[in-house]
Length: 168
Image 1 (tube, rainbow, N blue to C red):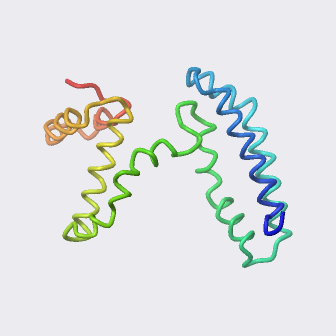
Image 2: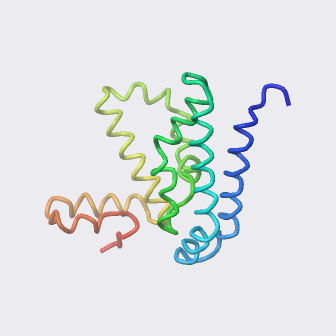
Image 3: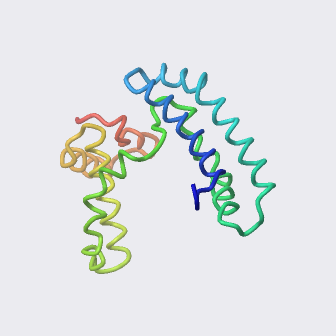
């Protein structure tokens, strides 16, 4: 067990418990998943947070462990956001897997022409993968929203969100 952090091992054990809850809630409705998260995951999260705060007081500033704890604690609201909505996944692994082909060839994107062009390409690629993840044909989605966008009321722009969009 040389070079292994006992603190990291304890944190990973708690995180493993959270993923165990997710495995139990995999094939159920979003509402039921939310209930299970509230019942089983929320107490694990609370214990983990309290433990991390206590450990942070014990580790020296500037250490790798302190930096890891600070990183997580600073982003705690974002890290625990999935507890509030059964439709939100615990992690972004599905998205990471979807964009891997794009990331794999990222050296080719160094020649997008400019920083602005690269950002545009990244935005379009994100929309394409997000459309696929939501079960839509990316071409149909982009064609529809780009056609309707110029005349769309700002108050109705949420119709273009992928989880709400329906082809016209």
